[in-house]
Amino acid sequence: MSIPKSFIDELKAKNPIESVIGAHVKLKRAGRNLTGLCPFHSERTPSFSVNSAEGYYHCFGCGAGGDVITFVANYERLEPIEAIKFLAERSGMTMPESDGREEQFARLKTRILSANRDAAKFFHKTLVSGKFAEKARRYVLERGLTPATVAKYGLGYADSEWESLTRHLRGLGYTDEELQAARLTAGKNGKVFDFFRDRLMFPIIDLRGNVIGFGGRVIDSEGPKYMNTPENPVFIKGRNLYSLQIAKKTEADSIILCEGYMDVIALGQAGFENSVAGLGTALTAEQAHLLSNYANEVYISYDSDEAGKKAAARAISILSDADIRTKILEIKGAKDPDEYIKKYGADAFGGVLRESGNATDFRLSKAQTGLDLNDNTDKVTYLDRAARIIAELPHKHRIIYTSEVADRLHIPANQLQTVVDGYLRGNEKNKEKEAWRSIEQSVIRQSVSETKAVHAENRIWGYLYRNPEIGRFIAESFAEESFSTDLSRHIYTKLTKCLTENDEFDILSECDPSMQGKITEIMVIADKVPVTRAEFESSVEIVKNRPKKASEMDNEDLRNLFDN
Image 1 (tube, helix red, strand yellow):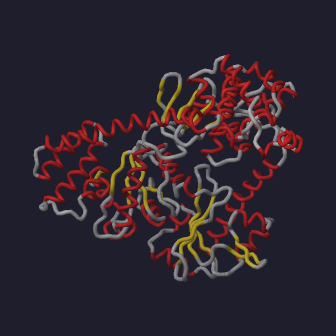
Image 2: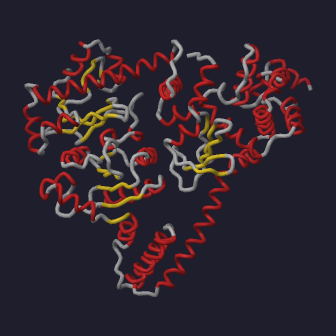
Image 3: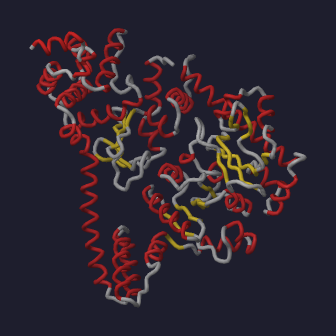
């Protein structure tokens, strides 16, 4: 889709990059730029930088980068055209008319969401009044769910027939290709059949109210206990959470993170609507950043078995990276929140929340697992593990926990403090090294691992970024084949196209999103260490005189090579 440059410029002006990114990432001022934890990978030391003046972001850790459109596309998992629409709606702008492949893909996503909505209605109606859904209705009653809860969460039933949903959605005008793209159906040997059969259905709804997928639980048949919609153009498991669209509407400033959908629904029915669950995968950094937008504190309510403890430990680390306080629910006398509430009631579960231990207590307890503190060898092991944990805490917390652990080990607090201080010094050194490595790794990659020609090409583009008036000189001095990398050839092609059409050239906006991370890397370096005119001219000569690779030589070049 071709969108006028004037529209894109206005779109960016009405959607300042620091405002859009700041809605998802906690940014802090650092000189001219803003920094924060990257939303695209898990990290403890901020390596994500936003240059609001120039309208771009770049992560030194994972290499992500681009403008406000690229950020929305990557964060929301949208196509570029959809990201533009998203920002247009955000700022009250009307999209220009268009068509093309991107529009076709956008229409497919719209059709998938529509099919999902109609499937959810079909499943719900089947559960409520379907003649073959008696066992599903009985199961729901046995689980203690009220009709109001069934309606609130949109629960449904996929019957055991092979084509019930397929026939219904075909009757509504959906094609087999659309249904398979939505993963509502599957195909084998030329036959199309329902993906979910004989399962209680849980629609998964995003923050905009779209049904993006389903979870299906077996009732009494064979097969995996839970099945989720496979990932597709509208459903990415690691980017969404079950029932977050309900949890975000509550007045609570905390969220209860559960393992299963039924736990969430049981808690919601008992009045704890600030409950969510993952979608069949371990908690991801992206989900943690999503939670940070709606809560300062998360209660982790995972199973108490070893697998649950490991998952909780991992979740604590990821939530900590997102600057979220965590507490661990210790549910005694029941295997999960659903069973606990049935046994003891909602008030008792509220007491569990109030008495929950914090993440540090959980980690220290876990560190003691399998150790006998009456044994000196085990005591030293625990001292080492505990000191590592305490060294990661804020100063005031370190004072409290140093005293507590020292009492537990029956040693003077100053002896434990000596070990903690050793890890503190190590942590500070590591943080400094990590920060330096993050900020400087782009320069290191260029100066050490890249060829002389590539380094020169990047200096040319860095100079162009700071001096756009030099564009015509570059266009006239080179040909596409003058450059050694796909990135440089891509930039050169876009530059000459803009000049031919008498358009202004913006090195970031004009280039493909897949190239923007590398381009913002060049821009960051050029902002920190501007390329001088002399360095630019030297780079031009290097690129002009670089020897061709064998793969770049034509027949004439090869003949000349052998003649010489």
